[in-house]
Image 1 (cartoon, one colour):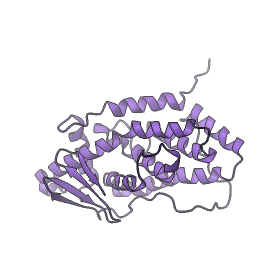
Image 2 (tube, rainbow, N blue to C red; image 1 turned 45 degrees about the vertical axis):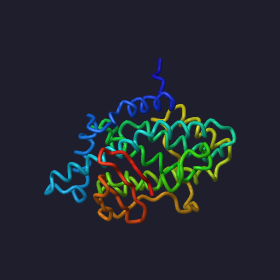
Image 3 (cartoon, helix red, strand yellow; image 1 turned 180 degrees about the vertical axis):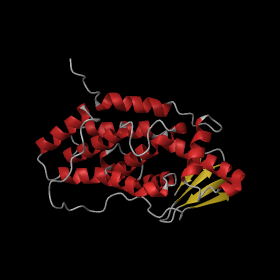
Image 4 (cartoon, helix red, strand yellow; image 1 turned 90 degrees about the horizontal axis):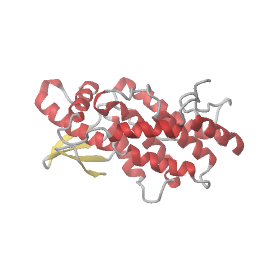
Length: 259
């Protein structure tokens, strides 16, 4: 009997279980491992010449990022709610299933098995970038575009600068797939969505067979690494972004404010 591929829902539940299992508490086992990879990815922000300060600040930022990653189950639930709703535009449904299909890929831009949950950064980026574009289809009051954009900037801090173009391409891949679907019939769109749901690991996102497709600006990550600043303030720290906005983080890693 041929092997039957796992469907999207089954694979999504495994990822949710892995995210829920992360120890996001201050001093927990995953924060130091995450912080070590964060310092390696961004030595410009966490210079080894200042080991004690780098470790303290990187652990606080790591704790905040783990809490942001810890919201993946709620994001997934909201997206699945939109996918299952009959009133959701078929092209949006396809884009959401495409983003969820990225989530369940075991080896993507950052393998999920990296220590401390660091491998979920790219998954969280893809999901959050997607929902900023389709927020109207998610449950009312779930989040705001402004909050998601600031959290995207925070997550982008962890991306090694040479990989930023790859991350941007992955984000734009979901956006492009949505616009490709706009040129298809509803039946074709639904068929594509159903194939992704049935076999997310074996079904590629739709690509354009046209010379060009009108593509309005989609989600953008910061492409200016090193332009962020991290400042100690009020017993915690503030990460400020070049494009505006900031995230105030407590010393223990809790997110105090997102602006």
